[in-house]
Length: 373
Image 1 (spheres, rainbow, N blue to C red):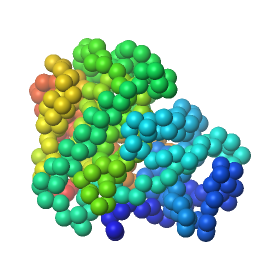
Image 2: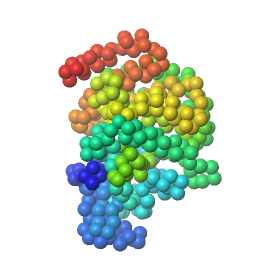
Image 3: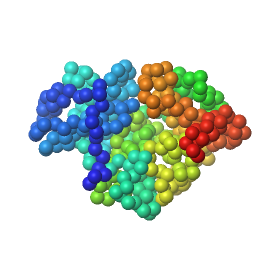
Image 4: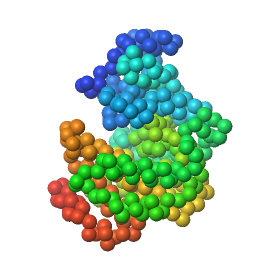
């Protein structure tokens, strides 16, 4: 099926020493037939992902980007063991092959897993699917249900207990992301002073602790080619940990762009949540709380935190562009996105007056005019 996700050409400067990898794979007991067809998946801001296709097997290799100094930021061993230990309880993960921590092989840690062939729903669903509104709705519910299923996986008495740091997850997250924003702030972005103060003043006790993915998006989901509303794979476990499930949901909704959102958010959309049949952000929250039985009188905290966390992630990328550490033109207008996130966060916490007076409203108007809105 043509809509099955495949890799593309390997990017210049990111070539893989396939001979060294193959030699190592044979020491792990794999018999490889034919010449490897090596392709690379899009992205690259995080870990680099390659497909190694042989006549008798189909593999995926994950490694950190070059120049990574802190292994904690791209911990291949942690990501490998999370998936290997989780698959008996949550069988929509790729099967692991082996982990390599011998840097003599390709100069860094890496791991190899078997490829799950399927459809990855990115900014636009493949037109070949021809989904109607009911199918879009079913896809949406299945993705949320799979997150709920993850949050029910038992962790006590398992290797997963080592992932967490105990109670106080919400507080640690607010303080950690607050510090990251301060380090990445540039002169042309808001200080988030009101938002950061509000978050610190409204930190709840953890609702409870469970395994969380921490980067739950449609483009980390693999769909069954024969039944495209069904989830058969979940990818990118780099940030998985033990934490509060509502923090996982709030972070996921920061990426949830609706059809009624402004043009800045629409221009940055990376998943098909704008389609008719998709739940709104509020409907997602209502559905999740009803199905899990979790109660909260402080939902705004989790949604505002998710937005602030996304702002920090975007700002960390923009910081590299601002200081000419990267020339990627796609990052040029990220500072405007930060302002748009700031306005949404202010509105969520009821500071409409501040949001209305924020100078970013002018940037949004300018952005719309530039696109003929």
